[in-house]
Image (cartoon, rainbow, N blue to C red; front, side, top):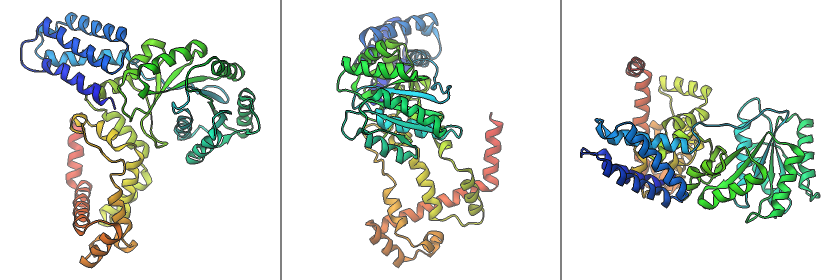
Amino acid sequence: MFDNLSEKLDKALHNLKGRGKITEINVAETLKEVRRALLDADVNFKIAKEFTNKVKEKALGQNVLTTLQPGQLMVKIVKDELTQLMGGEAEEIDLTGSPSVILMSGLQGSGKTTFSGKLANYLKKKKTKKPLLVACDVYRPAAIDQLHIVGEQVGVEVYSDKGNNDPVAIAKAGVKHAKEQGCNVVIIDTAGRLAVDQEMMDEISNIHKAITPQETLFVVDSMTGQDAVNTAKAFNDVLNFDGVILTKLDGDTRGGAAISIKSVVDKPIKFIGTGEKMEAIDVFYPSRMADRILGMGDVVSLVERAQEQFDEEQARKIQKKIAKNRFGFDDFLSQIHQIKKMGNMKDLMGMIPGMGKALKGLDIDDDAFKHIEAMIYSMTPDERSNPSKLDASRKKRIAAGSGRTIQEVNQLLKQFNQMSKMMKMMQGGKGKQMMQMMQNMR
């Protein structure tokens, strides 16, 4: 996410992090490189210039040149200004109304339909929310079928009327159906075009007037760069939408859209899409995104994702098994599945401070666990429960069954045993001592 921008900003600020004397001249030179990095990321020239001017003004106003750590203070100022540029505070969607109606808009190919499913899944996890998806794209071949598939994936009902070519009537009927079925959130997926045209704008405007949604969201492909900002402006002029959804942030995005869209349309980015999985949706936090852009990671989001997948009942069962030395490969497998649900592996590792630079150029397979899973699935239920039974002949069979080598099976067993010992230790006195030390450090 924003790898190129992060690298260029790091280079631009690197000289100021050193021990050399900091002067107004090299601050100006650094900010020139910062501006160039923003322009390369497809940030609007005017916005990039205003940004560096504000940073310079704050830097000189806070006497950066005379502080003990001028480089660190400059990074903080850049981070604070990036945060403000992207919106300052996070803003969630308005879910007032009975039902709450959310209208999705955007160009064809921006990821509207998929994100409608992700948003339904996200809201469904809030126990008081029962969403309904409404298919109003009557033009694109198989668009209605796609929404039904997405709805099935996340376990959310989809309302559609294939014989009806009037999207306004479908939207109104969908809201009525939601009330009848007790659904308290309606997400309306509308048609897009390859480019902005009057017919599309009239249609989305008519749907908007007919259903008066609590939230109108503009979905934009972040990989389109500055074009995304221009399209957002065109839609906002007609719809006056409430917020922006940035999709495909896990792709080869330069970051310009995320950084400059708030300044152009004065509407917050509310959510981001970070992968193909239905769980790959995050509330947009400008401060956290600024941290990631500057290579500082995002530990808070990482912990939040882990908590979302954390099953307390399962954790208690595993705790008991560890205490009785009965932790097996089935338990290990369930832990892997929870990690996989957290999202794209490279994205997750990039949330760890300092890892972004270390991962540069590395292609981390999203199926990084598939070889481990193959070896575990090649074991019998008894072998998974009792790993100590894995003798040479059994290992040979597991290797052949999973298409791996005996050395890889041995390595898996070694890692599993090490992890089991560590977990056992954490259950005992040393783990309690460590927890006590952490509490005392607060």
